[in-house]
Amino acid sequence: MSNFLLITGASQLLTLRGRAPRRGSALADLGIIRNGALLVRDGKIAAVGARAKIEALPEATAAEKMNLGGRVVLPGFVDSHTHLIHAASRAEEYEMKIAGASYEDIARKGGGILNSVKKLRAATSDALKQRAHRALRQFAAYGTTTIEAKSGYGLDLSSELKILRMHKELAAEQSLDIVSTFLGAHLVPPEYRRALSGTKGYIELLTEQLIPEVAQEKLAEFCDVFCDRGAFTLAQSNQVLEAGKRHGLAPRVHAEQLKHTGATKLGVKLGAASCDHLEQVNSRDIAALAKSQTVATLLPGCDFHLGLKQYAPARKLIDAGTIVALATDYNPGTSPTVSMPLILSLACSQLRMTPAEAITAATINAAYALRRDDRIGSLGVGKFADLAVFDVADYREIPYYFGVNTCWMTIKRGVTVYAADKATI
Ligand code: NIG
Ligand code: FE
Image (cartoon, rainbow, N blue to C red; front, top):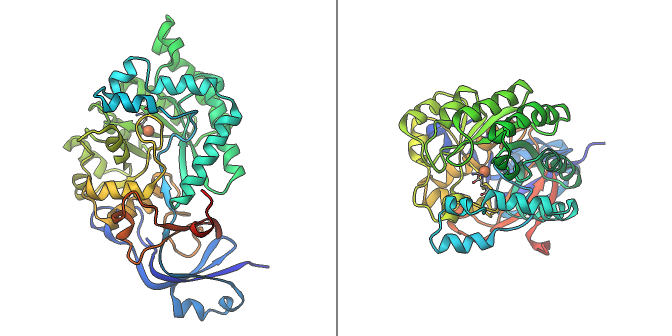
């Protein structure tokens, strides 16, 4: 027998229905229904519309009822860029940054990504998993229902495979969806820096052993590369992403974060699902993105945490017609946050996006970046009942209250996974 749930009492129901992905002025279209209701059947949306209409449906009578008391409902956030699995914070580097050391100064002193690699290799699987579970509960508490998760703090065969297998285990052990990305090309690990084969040898390990194994075991859908000063060059990035493609892993790229490298053009050429960061993009990159299906994923949490003044040119990207998404980039080095509402606040105040544009970028466009806009990121018939309920009367108050968690309830496939009233965290 089917299991019906009738949800009423949404002062604003942000459906995000219609054409996906959204570009240009369409980013402001939230498809709002005032005094809206949803009928959920077996975890999927069976009907959506004005309350009177949905309540009148024959299935509504016997359905379980949930009244949201005039709050705002939107699709659960899709956080399309995270580095979920890591062993510990890098609070010691935070102090160095405040004192004036740059991200790259710290990396040169053996800190940065390699600090996290050392910590991860020394950690037990249990400890890594416990930390990830805690983060996943926190993601849910801020209204996120799907995350992408990258490997990249293992950087050897066994540790990278361990992280990717953990993505799968975590997906089975809790409610949020986890979309797995292989980021073996995050940095060259220390043992290869000392070896004669150097970077070339490490790229061989990635392209000839790790990528085939990851694909064979179906441990990831995407292959990512950190193409930047101090990480991988354009040619090396191309090699890794091409190898990923040959094995069925769709490309995505960390592009133009610290320095302009041409990674955006490479991403577009390879048909990447997304190019992420983009603080240093130029007008030619923007034009190339605008003509493509590659999503421009902006990560303002990094610039905020690192105290950098140059945010990605969101207005130019939107006005040129690129598909813009927003994500946390949850990681211990540049963006230790799980809060999509805080990212929306930064997008509004620093990137000059409107609240409506920011919400679109964090839902339907982010779902498109993960190639899942047919299932998540909007509230239409047949989509998953993945919902975030905010204790506000107007959606603009979600970014307006910065650093305050107004998320009141999170629902994943029709099941409540977070309720502020019952929260113990
Ligand atoms: O997305 N830029 C590369 N990767 C991460 C940072 C990783 C780290 O510092 O640990 C990022 O910003
Ligand atoms: Fe990242």
